[in-house]
Figure (cartoon, one colour):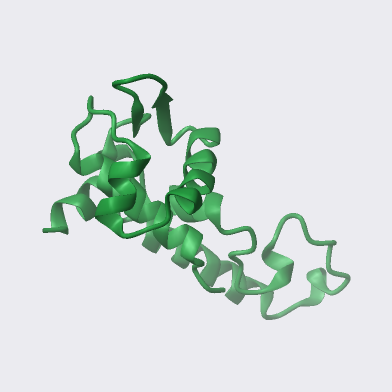
Length: 136
């Protein structure tokens, strides 16, 4: 369970866009320059953010990207949950994993579930707006 660069950079991208204002469109080139990230890599991150409804894109001369909803309504968990494919403390917590034959008798399963819920609640506490406000 490690947050990948994709997850960390996706948070940085959303924070960068949020700091530009709700109605402003930001170009990938500008984000790339401010964040010191490859424009090519940002394209793959933006695609995930657009596909999952966190960012809207606009083509053309005044185009770019903006948040699809207010920064106060987007949490760190919203980002991590779409960028991290296997963000589970144990494999049996992943709904896509085969059902464990020991599930009914597993004494540790409630502990893992509690940990997973605690982790989600932790990331849900932080909004993009709050994170953007903390950045200088």
